[in-house]
Length: 539
Image (cartoon, rainbow, N blue to C red):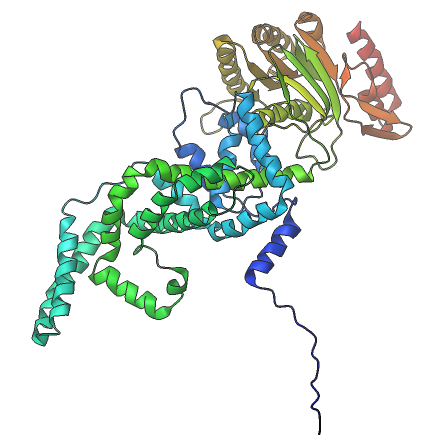
């Protein structure tokens, strides 16, 4: 008897689409996302959503001054447009209740520490990554359009066409009567769709989002994520709306079928199924819009929390802030999130404001931005890029980027005067502000600059904290007791000239700027005259 032999082929591991997606999620965890971002779409929730009277936002000018779009991009590893929009929204609004900030941060840590749970959710969120989902806030945060007048005609002519076609089973010649009805339905479609057609794609995407919400609601919520509980509570509403919106969006397998696409096209044109689906779902949408918003924001919050957790995983260190009720800023090894190799600084002020001096590029503007950015992160995401942070609850207002406005014929100095007046008006409203001004009144002459700066800064520091960069050392004496001076200085090591980016107390006393002239080969006579004059000016 001959025993057959079988060739042994190596086992081939077949990766499903889910396995590939899971592998990619694992590989990109704690890594920055380099995708292109459209901030007009990302900010849509923030711009559209009604804010409570108590809500305090980071204004557009301060947001731009502090490069917060770039910082958002650094933190943003979201999968869904809803997640990106939610993260942007919470980063633009100060949360003044420390207990709510602590709860928000606890969610970040839960996702950071539970990879299987996190990845299970992320696999479901991948279905909502399409760019078209950015437009959902345009529907849910605005007034839903009313059903078109005479919408009952839509039902009537759709039913009439169906009845005629069904009647051909008994009497075939009646099919001719369907021709004028089809023409009438085409006219009705074009007439009514002008008012509501722009919502069809958004409603189709909303339906898909609700389907994913139903799947998320079935996840075992042993970690007690509050947003998952909100989604679970609203699952009956989601199921009803999915059914009502059924004809607006086919199932995925149906949408891929060319025959079904052709059939759906006929149904939409001659039987008005899009319009009927809109009318059928209209009342349900209006009645349950609050639940829809809760579900949408919960999905966004979950995705945003996972994103922040990924960012925290990347950081070498961070701290949760301690909030004080005094004018105390006390930070240990604080740094800026956009610097690849940051130089950390310790910094403390108590019941005073700050003048920061130093050469250009020494780090003074970056430093005041560092304090401001971390103040915002502390009150939105409840962490600082420092080893310790004891700070007040502060609203940041900045004046850093200033340019001539050619279109309005405004000079640099004129725009600066207008902007500083806005800051003065905020200061007079009350306390709780951190004002940043980069080189105050640099657009005018020395005498008027120092005089105006002194008067303005005395006003700003009465109830609030100001951090101001300047080259005018005279301000220290003029503002003694109200401002303390710190500085950044150049370092000279033999023939090497460099910045150490470390903040130091007191005014800068070095003559390194003149030393640089010598190092660059300026004539000896010029260098000597510069040194002699600088000594006389100090005296």
